[in-house]
Length: 102
Image 1 (tube, rainbow, N blue to C red):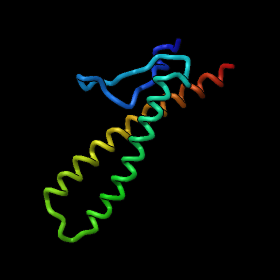
Image 2 (spheres, rainbow, N blue to C red; image 1 turned 30 degrees about the vertical axis):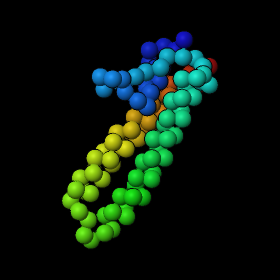
Image 3 (tube, rainbow, N blue to C red; image 1 turned 90 degrees about the horizontal axis):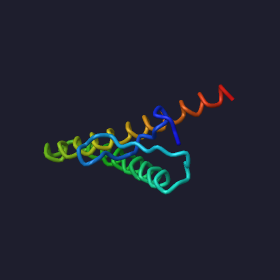
């Protein structure tokens, strides 16, 4: 089993909004694959949203309500993207540490 500093930050939160973590030695296991797929979906949605944002911001007469909704959606996408980056960064750090001591 993984040590506490090797827990994987999952790309979703619990019902109380707190981070969820996965402890496993099987990177190809069901929960790891589910997390990988969710990260891929989140990053794809962020990419699509960025394109939409660029289109909306290019319009001279964008409605303020549309801008508020865009801001809300971009904030959520940024939160998800940062969680994915943090999770992947931690996993890269633990892998590079493992290789130095082998």
